[in-house]
Length: 129
Figure 1 (cartoon, one colour):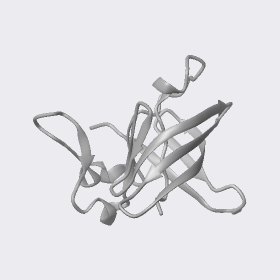
Figure 2 (cartoon, rainbow, N blue to C red):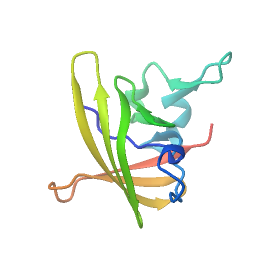
Figure 3 (spheres, rainbow, N blue to C red):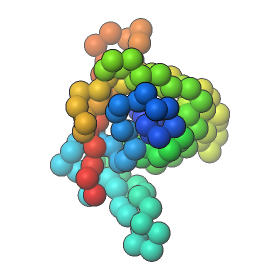
């Protein structure tokens, strides 16, 4: 199951102050090992061994992409420093709705928290590629 995802402010509505579009990884020093950019299309994608370097996700308008999963944002709500998303996610073998609860630390850092599982958090940093 996918570890974490976030969405894009362009589909969250005009009241959203935080821009989430872009490439996010668990280790800011490993951006170039996790993500690659197609020279022809300029589209961001995952490096072949992205998971070895911590992995991450790509947030685009209305959707989220991981190395092995694609999600469509169904609902979102930003309240203060919290962003709550519900996404319809698909892998090669299953479809499921996934809830993401994100704490906004600053413009380039977020933390995914897991409601009901105290003490489990996963930090992500925005890559400037």
